[in-house]
Structure formats: C-alpha cells, structure tokens
Length: 287
Length: 254
Image 1 (cartoon, rainbow over the protein chains, first blue to last red):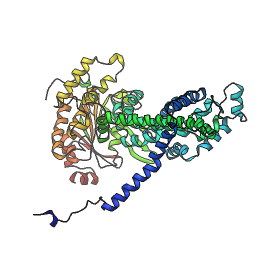
Image 2 (cartoon, helix red, strand yellow):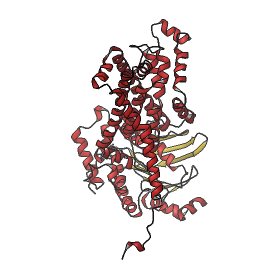
Image 3 (spheres, rainbow over the protein chains, first blue to last red):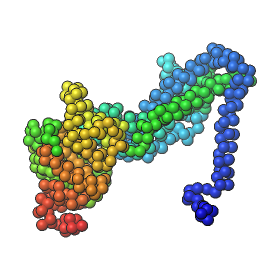
Image 4 (cartoon, each protein chain N blue to C red):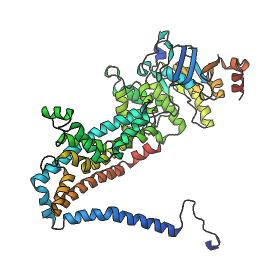
C-alpha cells in the first residue's frame, strides 16, 4: 500500500513551500544587509592596516580617556536605571492608584522624544544661563559640558529599558507570592529581597544588559550636553564621530569595533546565562 | 495521621475567637462589603459560602490583614485587632492558587516563615529542619522536600501551601478556595485532610468556598454571603432545614 493514495494535508499554520522559501529568503537578505554586513565592515575597516595599527590607535591619551569615560558613564547610569526601573515597575504593578496609565506613558517618554531634544532640555535646565545651572556653576558643580550632564543625558535616554522589561513580568506574576511572604511574617524588605527579586531576576538581567548596550552607544543626547572636549567629555561614540570627520578612518573604525565588541560581549553574556540557567528559566516560565 | 504536631498556638493557649463588628469595605467607588458582623467561636471550622462577588474573599483578607476595612472593627480574643499588621496577626493563609514561592524548593517554602522571624525568635537550623520534616509527614508527603512547586501536582501543591501556613505556628488558619483548583476526586480526599488537620491542631479555621457541598460537609458553621452582605449564619443542617432567605434556598439547592 503506497502513501501516494493518501493526500498530504498541511497543518493549519504551515505555509506553502514556495511562500515559505520566499519569507525565509527575505528574512535572511534583510539580516545580511542590515546586521551582518555592517558588522563585518566595521571590523574589516578597523583592521585594514593590521592589528597593530588598530590597537595603537586605541592606545593614545584621548582614546583611552574616551573609553574610560564611556565605561564610567555606563557604570553610573546602568545601576541608577536598574534601581529606578525596579522602583517604577514595583510601584506600577503592586499598587493601585490614580494616574497609573499616565505614569506608564511617562516611562515611555524617552523612547518617543528625540535624544537631541532631551539633550537640549538638559542644557536649558542646567546650562550656565539658567537659574539652576548658574547657581550650580557658581558653586563648582557644572552639569552641562561636564560629566554630570552626560550621566543625566544617558540616564534619561536609557530609562525605559529596565522598567519595560520588568512591568509585564511583574504583572503576570501578580501579588500572591508577596502576600504569602507577608502573612508568613516577612517584612516588606525581606519579601522584596527573597521573593520579588528572585522572580524578576531574568527580566532584570535582560533589561540591564540592553540598558548597558544602549548607555555605551548613546550619541545624540550626549553630543548636545558634552561639549565634545577631547580627553575630558568626549565619550566613545563622540570620539568616533570626531575621528571620522577628521578622515582618521582606521582610528574611527577601531574605536567603533571596540564599541561593537563591548555590545556583543553583553549579548554573549546574556546568551551564556540563558544556556547555563535554562532549567531555572523554564521552571519560572512554566509555573 | 501522625500525632506529633508542631506546637501550635492552640496547644499553648485557647484557640482564637474572632469577632467581626460591623465591618465594611469599599474599593474606590465600589462596595465589596456592607457592614457585616460575625462571631467565630474559638476552635471552630467556618465556611464563608457564596457566589463570586459576594464579599467572602474580601472578608477573609480583612481577617488576615491583607486588606483593611473602611469601617468597623475586628477583635481577636476580645481585643481590637483592626489595625494590626499582617505580620503580627500570624494568620496561616492558604491562597487560592497556593502562591508557593516558585524559585524555592518545598523545604525552603515551608521553612520560609520560620527563617523570616527576627533573630532572637528564629529557631536554629536543625530545629527548622526537624519542623519541616514533621510538617511534611503531617501532609503525608515525606519525600518531596527537594522538589520545586512546578514539579508537584495540584493536590500536592495545596498540601504544601497548608504545611507552609502551619509552619509559623499560626493563631488561626485562613483558606481562600482551598479546593478550587483541584479535580473532584482529589478535592474529596483533601477535604478530609483539612478536617483532620483542623481537629488535630484545634485552630480556629475559616475557609472561603463557592461550593455548597464543600461548605455543608466540612464546616461546623456556615456563613452564606451574597452581594456584600451575610444572608444567614448557622450549622449546616439548620441552613439546609431552614433557609433564612430566598437567596439561601436557591443557592443551597443549586
């Protein structure tokens, strides 16, 4: 008996072979042009005169200062936004209050406002010509064209990442486990530490990693507030732009490659953690 | 059933009697509970019976300190406990979906309340382990200490939730639809389990249910609720024989 007599039925969600091939083709082509090609070009350009030249271009004083500055800004902005994000998500998901929808919209604001506009707002608020900025400058605390301004701009732009990851997870998990901990005699802080935090740790990690990648790469808002002082307020992305404008393409692409590598490391870290903790992840999601 | 129970409040002092005095609760503009009054005698097993939206869960949560009433008072052994914090109430609370800590083993779940105690009152490690083992024996699941909640059946989860609530040596036991998520056969078995545990600990126990069979079979005292008010309070046989209102008659014959 041959199977040929039986018509072969397609599953309801399965597409015709031709359509399938076309869709996969479009996806692969899109990824190649938009993601893989630029990635390869960045590294190829950086290394076109060899490793030595590329590494040397990162070794001078200004380049090292840019790398330090970017890492410093990230080290301040990411923990700050992790803390803000947890607080905001906690507040939104565990309590009922008026204006909740408004607060959620407010959290999304940095995504919809152009980073340049955000930078300009910081200049207007804290610049030497404003009341607040004038006072701060007079007391030796300049914000604009200094590191605090860059930190503020970075925090503003990357604010939504952690909160946005946490809110859906915390809504889905509800409040019952926290309530259980409270009835068992745990304080609010203990409940947060031993019940809430472990339950959101993966979303928190994911949001933090995204936030890190974005904080290192932020250009627009930082460009407005930094003043681009070489060796002082020029971050990696700003240094890349300045080098490129000066036709120092190997130096520009070397730094670009380093920035890309840092972003790739964060993604790799995330994937690695997902693989090594797959069982825990599954346990949390299955529940 | 093993008889070696964790020393509960019941064995040290008389079980709690609870007075609910004109308790009302509204959330924003909606009224969940009209002023209701109810006396729960020491050591009783009480069912709050009613359809969804009748206010029974709200009343239970007010007893446990998870909600606070808009007006009225709650008295424990005659003393005003209306503003008492949820931690101070020491109510063993079993949640509808059990709310087991999903990232902890069964052992850690049950030990949670003991470990959460302030340093001076916290039992030493070995003592915590002994009590957890005893509770696992009590719920007749001695071998599951190392498992995670996701690896348990619905009935096992419910019993672990009960053990976790008992671990804190509660002054009362409050259960929100304890059998709601279980299939019919397991439900019957666990009903008897709850009755046994109540009889052994002597704890004043209040459970919420929408299942009239469950309430009638299990409880000493049934409180029928509807639309935020108490329709009738009585022994199961009295409610069956003399329903006080048309609602009660309809509801228990359904």
